[in-house]
Length: 275
Image (cartoon, rainbow, N blue to C red; front, side, top):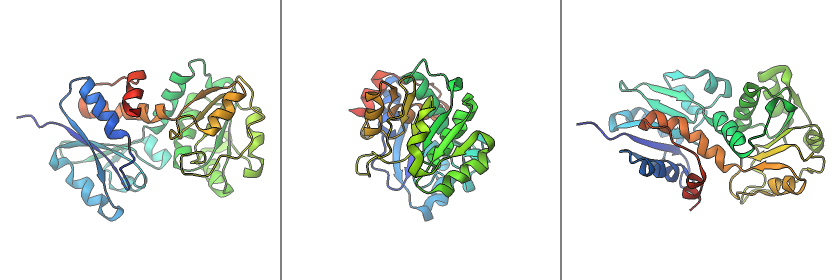
């Protein structure tokens, strides 16, 4: 008897995650046998939990805050991409119990940009990134791979931005947070990777007055869907792309590996997750 494949999202807390809704929708839409659940796992229980899952029929898992960095030490095999980013969000459990770790955040980010702004050309000019946390690392790797000529980064604490420059080299330039508004003047791609503007978080206060209307602007925050950051960019005539698509697209590679079908990210998927 073939075991029905199980997958999950692991985090702490986990109740906010939209991943069960997304993967549950895809399983139903494509008539596939399988299940996807949310598992709240404390830091000190992470290793034991990961090693117990394959025996319970789990074929893989998504990983969210705060475990994206620590899962790397428990993986048997880590992709170059996940190593470069220093975090994993997608795990595949092999039949022999070995754990394979990948990071699909950058893939999700670029796929969302290309879908939301089909005329976006990464090579057209510099990219400006607000924030220098884990998400920013994934975005930097993805933009370098896409051929962006220069990336200008500003973070509220400068050393974090400098650490990115040290890791990724000459294509990165760091600007002080007090001068962050100057980054957008020449940028053809502008990205907010901070939590500023998110429901319950502080406002995004950096001025976007220097934006040009041919610039593509995206926010990785998706609650609210249209952040004040995106609203400000829209008022200046820019093409804007919300953060929900990044979440949807990053789920595609894992779902395909676990359940054997490549799902589509379209308007119906968005509505199913938002409902």
